[in-house]
Image 1 (cartoon, rainbow, N blue to C red):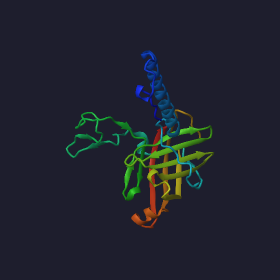
Image 2: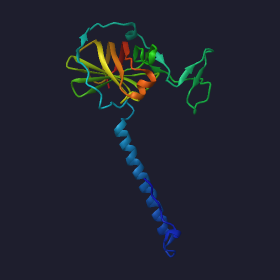
Image 3: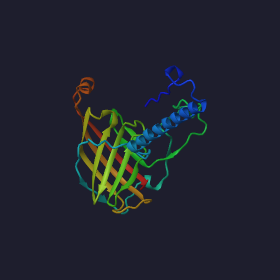
Image 4: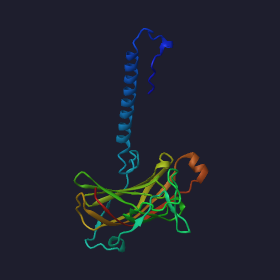
Length: 241
């Protein structure tokens, strides 16, 4: 939105007091920031407050399966506290750290560390890589949402909805929306208990597979028509928000 203040050349009365002109300028500036504030608020509402990725609304509905519950579910990851670095931090072979952000000074002496909440492997983008994070949140009284973002490529997401003893996985790539479809072909979820409240630690094991098919002509021309199988499997331990 552009706000234009008329000047004397535009026909402003030369006899108008300077204080009136100043009030007009101040009013215009206030209106400008008010409009920008409204637009920024709408942006936050549309994209969320940073707690997780925005969920596309036009994704195909996937299958639902039964959750397996094992009260004494065990894995070495559950008993340990593992750390990682933000995705913009890289460790060099000579054991010092480099930041990919332009505002940081290299080498980074004391890079921030983040507690890993998942140990999942994914073969998307044609190579195996580690997914280190999982977020859990309550949606109402009977639904838990698990979000597994890909730390190495933030365009990839995996959502798991758990409701009344059943679950459904939904995989997508933000850059591929409208050019690909993702259909779940196998899914298995094991949790350590049936009920969770906010603040509880949720532990589980996930085994997921889907088929990615190119539907856009440009994507098929660049990468071919052959479907790709994407797998994600491993364990997670996180706090329910």
